[in-house]
Length: 424
Length: 154
Ligand SMILES: Cc1ncc(COP(=O)(O)O)c(C=O)c1O
Image (cartoon, rainbow over all chains, first blue to last red; front, side, top):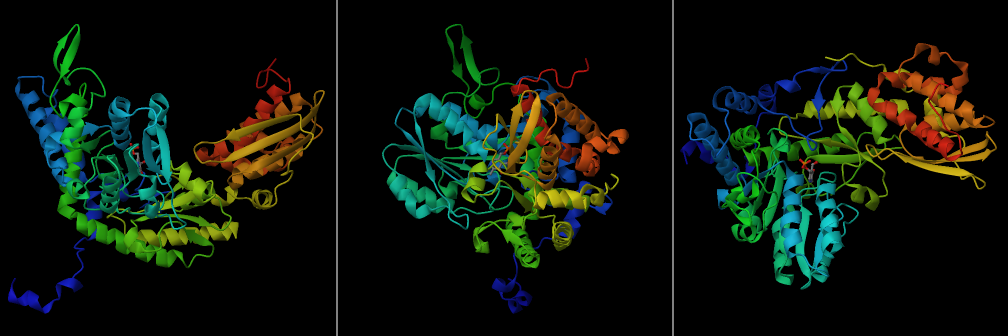
């Protein structure tokens, strides 16, 4: 440490070295007029924007290196294969995966969860087995399990949420038994913003059962430092497009021993070792789960996104979003009739604010905000089970990313005043 | 850059009035047909209840929840249905659909009554579905009441 830095107490130094105003220059899409106003993009939980280095990686791949992977002996195929596999290594490292071969490329979170349901679920679930999931899940972590439960005779059991949108974790030990084969839940709620204490929950599950734990990380990997090894879970799914990457790419991480015990999900090229008329043998991990030509450019784009996020710094991103959240909740409280969902303890939530506003319907709110250039989402957010818990048909949701600023929040607040002007 | 669609043309007082104080929003005990329509995108939901005698609509009520546009539209629609022949109701739906697609003559058609206040919706394409939710239910109710050939010119 240099003598000069002694004057500053480290605890007083914010981990945030992030200048959103500067980073925004990497996102040309943010610099545009919408309905006569400059765009305030607050729909990041749906999908995030892509920075120039990601766009450049995609273009460079198609301009210079495009070829199929793992198939050709020629130079372009070699380059494409190296780029694809190097992206896998960087993405695996980004989430703390012990081995890159444990990282399966998928189309996104939904496909990762379906891979677990149709490969692991059909193979290992029997009549009377139990799957524990939560009332907080996105439909993509509900419907696959309903389908597989119907096929196998397994039962779904539900962990409820409290009035502040936190999982009723103290009830979990009572739900666990020898019959519990899987516990699955979201790391961060896309509606409530709740950040679930994954490591604690995994510990409880492992003490009370032999179940495996699958985490839906769609809203966590983009916003928090994630280390799957430290979390102790067995499988973890996430999407590239919510973390500055392209659409159509994502990944499923799972423990090697678990992946090795599972049959292939899709059959086809790339995933086999030897094909004979009577049957085939499978390629090693991860290729056993990647049938057919993969989304090569998507993987490379996601690799570039991960590099970008690493450079910005995940702790800085988490910090910036937390500050923005605190600022936003403070300012929004000024708007008459504003009622947010989710935990009041900010240490338990991420930069997602779902809310209601008097008797104005979310659909109307979002149309009015759109006419003011503010992009938010209205609806059930693919989480009808949460909506039912709170007796709401829909909410309006503003969700932040590191490129959002307090000006974006101010625009939201001003837009809600316009709503009040119309709806009283 | 897109042009600003006029917000005040969308949220006419009459629409807000129907949203806050919907007409015919109660159960119809002697209904002859009931249709439930749901917009999975936004969660809006309405149940339309009609009492049909012969080929005439005697009463029209609804229940459900949704945005101001879907609620106002169905409230206005039910007010216009009473005493209409099934074929007239069908024609009303067709005319309103024209209004939603920006047809200028529909906008001044007195037959549409209060529904004309919804003409601004045509400039908000993502909201047209909301305005048509009640009419989708109506067309289904007409079919179930034995009226066929809707939307077809003889
Ligand atoms: C919590 C959560 N899980 C799963 C998903 C599904 O992700 P995708 O549509 O990218 O597969 C989403 C995003 O919509 C989400 O927010």
